[in-house]
Length: 269
Length: 323
Image (cartoon, rainbow over all chains, first blue to last red; front, side):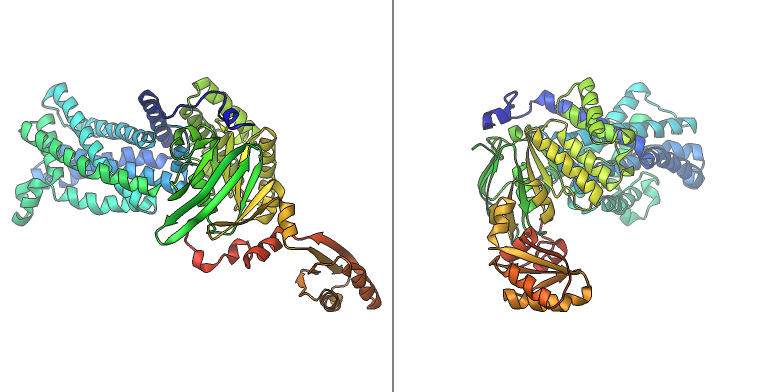
């Protein structure tokens, strides 16, 4: 057998094309979504936890903070959606770290597929999961009396903004997923960062009810800005300012963390 | 001769550690080539470089005639890799794991499904095909992993310690599979720390230690390199062991070893055999087994490196180095 016949039957391409890369991405996204079937815990994370948050916050804090559960839901549901979105970005790092530590990532890297497809496939799948839990939160909110004030356009814009922001923020999760030694550490990071971040925003409690020294931080907290943008789009209130500032935050997160994450990933594999 | 894998002067460092210190390899197409060495010797690093997962700091390598750096994508169309840790997706079923690979390789849905079904049957996984891989036993997982690396019918297969942690039955099954692949013309690069495995499968073996190839040849050539043979004597009555030890030492002038109830001692002159027989007879020792055999690879390794190849005796200063 000669080197030439080793390469037979067809002369292999030098590198995969863009269309092939997109096809690989969709296949790998399918793989991440099919996993849910065999891992019911993930469905619980994606579904039961968000619903539980809505119910607990609305009926436990509602009257104390806003006078009635109904009024509080109008204020807090966008905040709960933001917190849920932040937590959902951790799925990306968790899944990536699992692939890295179990050797699945190595297997994918030895296949003749686009280099970026494993990561893109995972992010695509996580965007679908994200959309699912946002839809679920809105659905449950509506059953409890939440009303969308700006019609379908507001709803779609809110969805788009949230997904764009999550996509940018998921690079933090990718970076963590590459750097830590085991999947559980991604979750620990998530709890350590996301709980303080969202609780020191106006996601659940209006800014003016917080200590004055904390209010300075609350006002620039990306969770506050994103929650305000969602309130504007879904309920009422200013839209342009918070949406623009949300997009700036997303752009900054993307510009800082995407290169760091890609570099860390290149180093690790 | 045509080589499926060629490597020249591969060097790879991890910080202050040199995992590969200039490795040359030439693997003829259609053969099994064994990389034999203890943990931390550099075997896995070598495989990762050849399988396009890792860039070498120095040197270059080709697989199927393509450079593993410049033409990595082409190399990937020729190779399959089964790692030390089963790299299947535990949250997918056996079928889904193979479908995933097939679809990524550009198979149509129907072709990917047919290939998956065939491989699952070949590897006796049909009954478990629709179960998540996390419910599989170690042997089943390793078979699925191997099946996954064969979906694209690779010309060159890298098996990185394929039987580590497997029970003897699963190990034998895997060996049979590898022999079948080679019969079909696949070139296999096998890393192992088990001498028996290299002896069983490989036509040629490179012994690796501290990132270098310290010896290379067929198993027989390597065994011959210890310069001789081993005399093995097993007395019928174990209480005769001290007598046998004394006779063996006296006749050969070397230090015998005892494993269970067999005394073995290296001999350079086959003429000692009759002398040993006469002396044992005179001492009225009944012998259950008495044989001259070639040195085992374990003895070869000890001879070449000054330490044994078994994992539990790997030098402590190499712990933590990517193998």
